[in-house]
Length: 541
Image (cartoon, rainbow, N blue to C red; front, side, top):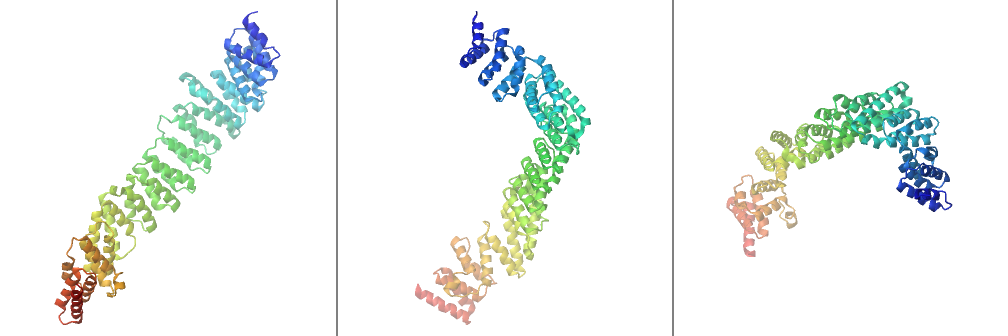
């Protein structure tokens, strides 16, 4: 008795451990022995999962053909590892086992069919693949889908010639199923799924009719759309493909629509497609619209930004908010959004637009800036609403020009004796970093005209005119005394009031202005008051 015979003999031992060890060793030795194969086959009937597992693994190595009758039943084992090992052992026999698998499929239960499909997938090869494809027709939708998933690795790993044979087999199968109508949707969907695994642009012609057929089962259309993603990896989609996907993206079936949208998002799209996506940005299904809006934001480019800008300006707030987020920081959005501000009457929407433009305001074209500024100055000068956002955009883009325009408008309003509006404009200018000492003085003088000029300390403490003049004196850059003395709009009462305050503060401007009131006032009461205040100030000093 040789060594192999001794090991084979151990497979009949009463000790399970020895039988398992013998099965493992035979798999490592791979003897060309019919006796060994038969003994391993016999060991499968012991009902011990661990022994069955190792016996099956060894049979896959040394030859499982003689033990097939005992291996097939194990495809239905309760042990998942045993089922997988049985499938591999059967597949190890090669394509000659395919007729046996076809025969067993005729009477197999659904669970048994799934395992037989797995064997065919493991086998690969033209005959096995054809058998698996034909078998899809006799399975329910879930089983057909499982069979398609099982064959994925084989299809993806096949060479060019084998892929062509697979394509021919699938197309032949799909043709045979057309006449069955919707009842064959599970088998058709599974076959289309496998078409996608081929990653072949030649499948597009086959897939298109399924995507376009609005009467087809949604699962069939969905699988065809997903298959497009694989087929179009290296090819730009045709107009017909895009039309089909856009139509599906607008379908009532939300799952189908989402699949179409995700597929469109995976493709390289030109401006013509972006224009057509505009319709979906306002779709009644907000989730669908938001997906398109977010995708356009990721896509970028002038056309996408134009579409998003329109959505931001015209669509209801939830859509507009999504568009605002998608446009954030995009330079291409500056021009279309700025142009939209020229005609936007909704102030809340205008502020939303302005906030989106802010980071890229310098990219607003100069001619559009000029129009925005002219519009803002016209409305501001007339006291009309709707100038704030427009002015802010120009101020972010070109603060110097915006400041000059405010300055010029204030001067025109003062000249037209429209002090209230001029004051509003100068206050705006005073809140910018482009304000000059003269601007502050002009503002202070207008505030002074409005002041109640109450010389009580607590009243002076809250006087905007005095506060503004104090800031000018503190910052420097202007001879405040000279400017006030030369301003013809100021009355003796106003000069006295300012002189009184700064005299109280111990500032030389107080004496300067009080002296001016004394000089110009003559024998008037206000001049007398100024003289008395000067006298008191001298005693204090």
